[in-house]
Amino acid sequence: MKQHRVDYSLSSMCHCLNVSRSGYYAWLHRKPSQRFLRRQALDEQVKSLFHRYKKRYGAKRLQRKLLLENGKHPDLKTIAASLKRQGLIAKAAPKFKATTNSKHHLPLFDNLLQQNFSAIEPNQKWVGDITYLWTDEGWLYLAVIIDLFSRRVIGWSMSESITANLVCDALQMAIFRRQRPKNVIVHSDRGSQYCSYAYRQLLQEYQLLGSMSAKGNCYDNACAESFFHSLKVEAIHGERFETREIMRKTVFEYIETDYNPVRLHSSNEFLSPITFEANFKQSLSS
Picture (cartoon, rainbow, N blue to C red):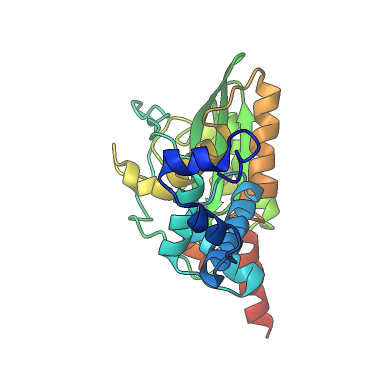
C-alpha cells in the first residue's frame, strides 16, 4: 500500500485489501522489531558472502565463513532459511561419467591405498585422475595430482589429447612443487596413461610408490572424483566456453586462486588446503 500510495487512493486500497485505515497508519509508524532487524542484517551478510564466493557455498560453508570473519556462529538452519528466503541456491551439477580406458594389457600396480584417504602429514599419499572438459573447439583434458593430507591440488596439466604426457606433466609438477619427496603413495585408476612406460619410469626415477584402484571401482579414487565434481559445479557447469584457451584460464583460476588458497574443505576442519598446510607447519615449529 505504501509503495502504490501515489497511484491509488488509500480508501480504495484499504477496501480492496480489507485493511482499516487506522491499522495501516499504525503499521506505517511502527518501528521494526529487534528480531526483524537481526534477520535483515543476517540476510545482507549471507547474500554478500554468497555472491563473493561466486554462488558456490551452501549453508555449512557460509556458516564457517561468518564465524571466521565476524566471530559469530549462527545456527545452520537459520542460514539455510536465509538462503531460501532470498532465493539463493548454490551451484549444483549432475554426476560425471568415468573418463579413462582400463581395457588394456599393460602392467598394473597393487592397490596400496585401499580407500584409506587419511594422511597425518603432507606427501604421504597423492591421488591422480583425468577428466574431460568440453569447449566449442572440442575436448580439453585435465589431469591432476592431489595431496590427501590437505586435498591440495599440487600438480595439474591440460592437453588437447589424452596421452601419457598429460599425466606425466601433472606428476612432474607435483614432484617439483613438493621438492622431490620419496616413498609417496601415488594412487590412480587403471587407465592406460597411468600404466604407460613413461609414467612408471617417472615413479621409479623419483622413488614413488605406484598404486591403482580395483577394477571398475570408482570409490577407490573418490577424492579426485570429488575435486572434479567441485570444479565442474562451481566453475564450469552452465557456462559456455568458446575456446580451449578460455577453458584453460578458467581451470587455472579455479585451482590456483579459488580452490587451493580460498575454498573451505570439510576434511580440513573447514579451512582451505593452503591454510590447513600452513597451520600444520606452524604447529611443528611451535
